[in-house]
Image 1 (cartoon, helix red, strand yellow):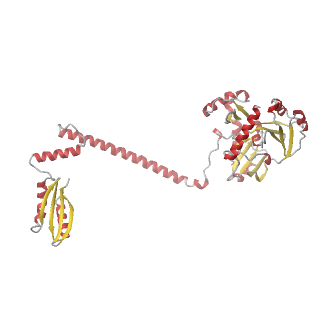
Image 2: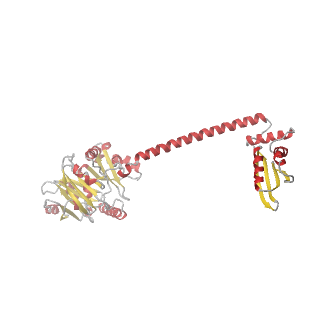
Image 3: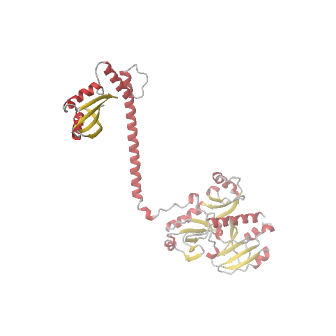
Length: 433
């Protein structure tokens, strides 16, 4: 019953992936390459360029260079020998990624033929079920990838070959390549074994005999590719109906992307830069350097100005304290010092530039040059002298403003209005600070 529940959960997971697009149906061409357990780069490989279920090209080759042009613009998938990877389950009471990675080598240690440190662990989380796990030798993965990279082929993904077989209902699926029988028992389970003539492989018989009757598959779909194989005795011996179907190699493999991709973690492919964008890399690098340099210079200038400002403020406070030791509150030392000086100047009988007498004495020569009666009124208010004038034209008003400005005063035309005998103008005169 447990095995049936696992298969049901796996089928639901696969259907969800297919409909949601997460690792589902391939929507772009893929170059598929099958390698054997003894493959070192010289042996023949089967390959297929496909777009979903459509087979575009297929063949066999001993020279990987023949596949270099085919991989351009497509995703390259390598199907690795099943016997080189342990496909199993692991009960771990946590879903924390870091804790799982630490626990897996200890939980599976007894199933491994090598030191756990030499294994590359990949797992897939199944809600309510044990983790689906694969363990592959790091050395093997490195050797395979080195050969592909030597020929200029960069695999995007790698899956154990048996995980690519199709699986229907509660049936197992099997096929054979050469003298290797592949048996898929679930979406995340399967194994491979050697064929010995027409005898049922011991590993297949043991796998079936280890299950309770209600956990055994109802049928086994046997996809026959090239050579025929009499499996009637297998059915009689196991009590499981084996349905033979004629198939070609690549139709036997599903178009769904399996979940257990071996090229993860330290073996994850490096993302390639789009050749169309690569020519912009030097310009982008120069721009980044320039921006970084400008930022550093601006920060340095800001820090320098900030330091100078703080030092000037400290010196101003010290000067204010030494000049006016009786002052207790210092808010704006520059403004406070100016007001103190103005107060001292007024109390000593002198005057400052903003006093009425100072402004009048400075502007008197220019005003005296005007015609009699031109100055109609004078008012002093808020450190400014306001003069109302009656002048013949605007030109005369502008000339007066310029003369007053040359005498060291700030002059503002407040109003200038025409009237029957000329214009009426008003000026506001203040001393320069």
